Amino acid sequence: MRPPARRRRRRRALPALLSLLSCSLAFALASKDIKKVVTPSKNLEKNGMSRKNDIDLKGIVFVIQSQSNSFHAKRAEELRKSILEQAADLTQELPRVLLLHELSEQEGAWTILPLLPQNSSWIFFCEEETRIQVPELLETLRRYDPSKDWFLGKALHDEESTIIHHYAFSENPTVFKYPDFAAGWALSIPLVNKLTKRLKSESLRSDFTIDLKHEIALYIWDKGDGPPLTPVPELCTDSVDAHCATTFHSFLPLCGNPVKKEDIFVAVKTCKKFHSERIPIVKQTWAGQAALIEYYSDHAESSIPTVDLGVPNTDRGHCGKTFAILERFFNQSHDKVAWLVIVDDDTLISISRLRRLLSCYESGEPVFLGERYGYGLGTGGYSYITGGGGMVFNREAIRRLLTSKCRCYSNDAPDDMVLGMCFSGLGVPVTHSPLFHQARPVDYPEDYLSHQVPISFHKHWNIDPVKVYVTWLAPSEEDKSWPETQEGFKEEL
Image (tube, rainbow, N blue to C red; front, side, top):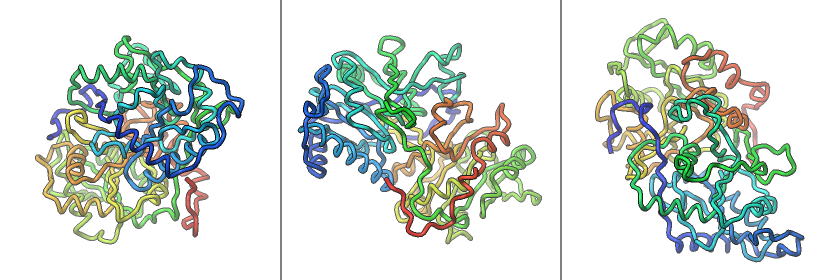
């Protein structure tokens, strides 16, 4: 599937929501996982828990929004184990806990609302780093009548209209609420059944998936014909309040020694017209954190210096330039460097935080990392890493790409989308991190960013980029205190 040539920002996004899974598959996966864990003991009455709405844990299906990369799969498995261990102390019938990446081999599995058994009452979705207090969550869900349509979560809203939501509700963007996935979110089964029926009767046009949490809320709301999000105070992203049923594990992961500076090569895409405008900001902010950095342009300028790759500058996509960078990195002087980061000249990034994050990924497993978008996922499309927030490759991913025959169909094709299409064809999944950002801090809810340790933002438009860097990305005292080596250290999952 060839990406569209015109600019993506002009197109409306629609989530690729598919009812894909059969009940038998869900039951098979669930029963297999339950046998691996623990044996149930006490029951709810013995623990003094009331039976409002007569909801038991067996009526909740937990869906962890997991990824197939080994680091993320392990974190999701640890969360599944935690849920089942807690459940074993409360009821004789354990809930089903499903990992989303195990439920489908299709490219768009991360956007799917699964069709799950009808004898359940709730589907509860959570991220791999969500921390769940199972008894408190059960009591929270019991307050809501499961025979009605419920869409529950921690509410986010836009302070101002933003491009990543296609300027929706531009007159008053605060009126539309959508869930913070980090806190978990829930759908009652009657609502799931209505969504399933709707999905079967309506054809979804091929389009972009950009911010899934906002797009799912729009789809469920259905221009007022469906329920809006109901804010639930017990679904939290911090642990300040004792009443919280969920919290979010928000610190930046570290899985051993941070990757050395010399193991990361940074390629900055630029062009002659931005040499004097953007490159000085790069050098004033984050460039000093990089041991290996080159600026790739359509014009060689020794004072910077820039490298002319022999690819003419284009006004739209930069596929030719990006593939030239990949070839240069892989075939020339950087044969011992493990990681390549490609950024735009108006990307703001923290290399020190990236070094810490990359300690969690294996060199032998292909990694294509950043902020994940999707194109045409309802019609056999693919996921891709959006370029503005930064695209991170390990050497194995680049090797597989360059030994394939997948290349640009034109120099001005959208490079990030072509890369996504190529890796999809190679069976290499993109790996999503919400710490990379395609837009500016002002384009995201403050409450959403409050539980992040961001790695990147994009665009200098209508902001002071130096101030944004200092506020959000410059090394803090905590960052500076990270040791270069931590013998024997391993993050607890």
